[in-house]
Amino acid sequence: MNEEYFERAKLVIPGGVNSPVRSFRSVGGTPYFVDRAEGPYVWDSDGQRYIDYVMSYGPGIVGHSHPQIIDAVQQSSGNGATYGAPTLGEVEIAEEICSRVEGVEMIRLVSSGTEATMTAIRLARGVTGRDKIVKFSGHYHGHADSLLAAGGSGVANQGISGSVGVPTSAVADTIVTPWNEIPDLDDSTAALILEPLPANMGVVPPKENFLQDLRIACDAHGVLLIFDEVITGFRLAMGGASQWFGVQPDIWCFGKVIGGGLPMGAYGGSREIMRHVAPLGDVYQAGTLSGNPIATAAGLAQLRLLNVDAYEKLEKTAERLSDGLSNIFQSTGIDVVVPRVGSLLSIFFTNQNPSNFDEALAAAENGIYADFFHSMLKRGVALAPGPYEALFLSLAHTDEIIDQTLEIAREAAEELT
Image (cartoon, rainbow, N blue to C red; front, side, top):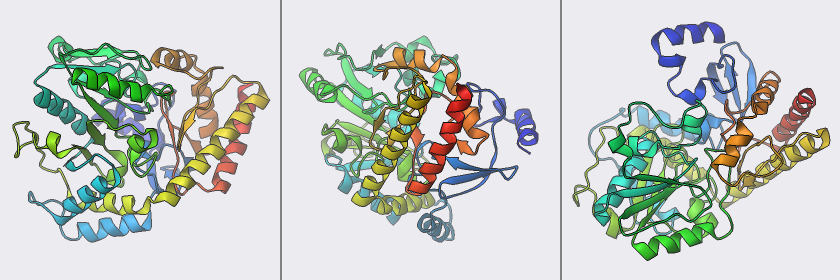
């Protein structure tokens, strides 16, 4: 059925997928079509069950079809899908986010991470009165025109560096600089935007004190520091990456986890900064479905499941997996590194942890990941179909599931040799 569905999809959907990362372009073959999901598993249209490490690229942090989230969605949907008017759910999830993240005093809900980063840039320009923005190579901030340059997995898995259709004028004020090097900032720079823990070129951690040094550099020139926490927000810790690394930006962007599996994003900061957003200020942003009642219900239910114990469990599970994978590859003589920060990890088929996008690119382009991906998939483990992605764990990934995964990984590694 997967083949049949894909052929049908290609007739009516560009490339047969509604997001390029699902296309299997960088690994080859036909994507599996998911029929249903539960806990750590997905089942495809042929009835094949997979241990899932895609988890919708991050939102599924408590596992698929968690009963508390399903119940919240069912109760909310019974009251209607959208109203074009405020709801209590919007207030409750905004309060929840503000209570978790030190420095976030106000939040504006949107419908995607791309909307969040796009508006954060507009807000930074509005606050500072400056135009130029700086981003790091390999950091993906959604598909807004000005942020696509050197955008990591979102475009790198497709073998491209940006996008046709983006006018030169749209990126004229976007400066791209290497990750883990302090960029040149000046009094014409409105914002420096980054993933505090990059996970769109694989997991490539910041060097020691690098984020602290960025904070100092931004302060020296009046540049607003923007953390794109669409992936790291409420995955690394209760307060996200800013809590994990002990560095506060001026503007935060969130997504994925906060929607509980439904489309939602958010951007926030201090009252002083957020007062510039309409209707309080002159920075305009709007959205018909922003703060959708079903999405806020799902997101709030998920956030309430994520306490200190949950994050301890996620990190221990990730450590079990990363250490196990490292030992397996070492024993089979394959050059592999498995960098991990908290519950985020990735696999690079190289002998040294990449520290920037060029090094991650060299590791990704050797072609070994595609063979490993398919070797795992045919044995019932679904990894992301691209070498630049992270592995996403959930609370549903038990020690038994990890041990099963490692047994399969050993077979796959032996097949590679």
